[in-house]
Length: 344
Image 1: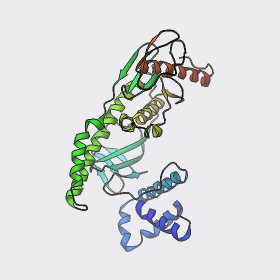
Image 2 (image 1 turned 120 degrees about the vertical axis):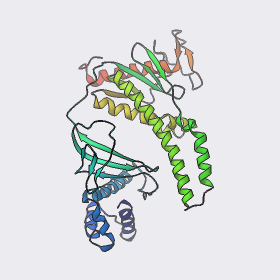
Image 3 (image 1 turned 180 degrees about the vertical axis):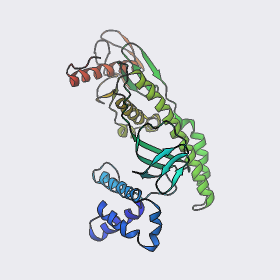
Image 4 (image 1 turned 45 degrees about the horizontal axis):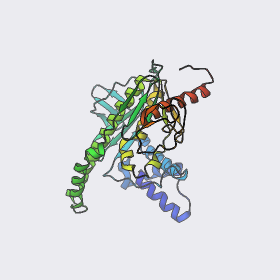
């Protein structure tokens, strides 16, 4: 449906200068299902077909709002998904989906609440996953009152300062770890004839390596973010421009580290448990400022890992000093925003 109506609205725009709205597509879909060549559409629920049209409408809105590029046609060889906005339930045998019946499934956690929607995804490696959105009245409150500042980097992925102690977490670098395996699979793919079954198999082998890299990174960052959220009520981090960093010579290492993914995990996990992620300005000189006396040393560059403050003679580890300054700046921001209502 997505590809069909993307093509149809593109053609209409070329002919008339006006594309199709969601209402026009939905009305056209009703008539389309009555045609003999499209009777198979009735095997799916109306809600799932309409959801595909809503996804297309959202893609165009993102394009016109300059949040994304022009919508592309979806390939059957890449990840696909379908959303069931209603009529889903769970039982002992698995997940019940409209018109499909019961599908055997393994749950990663117990669902305690009313199911609102289910999104079924098929990966490029042929695996199926279901993401279940459910309504729950339970709010897990984080009982700790700690505030920590974290400095993100490449030599140490995270440097954490909680007001008393400092520790570092090293990056796992999954892309580098599987680089040789990926290179061999890509070389094998390049030797296969386009359109052949062997090429499709080679594409899947490359996708399996990419999937391994992604899963390794996500698993590590989920566990790290879980640890940080369990230890803190407030986490302070820099508001990094990931897109800007991705245009530098360190782009590969930065994307491999997953800074944006980690900050996203921290944000929603803290919010879910009554905590808060505070982000300081990306131009705040956390590295160059002495955390003891406030002196700003403009001579500090990326190659300097340790330095001594010219003003108070304090020896600083670059990352630890930055984490301390980030925490202090976060507390200052909190004191302004809360206007004395909350103490940390």
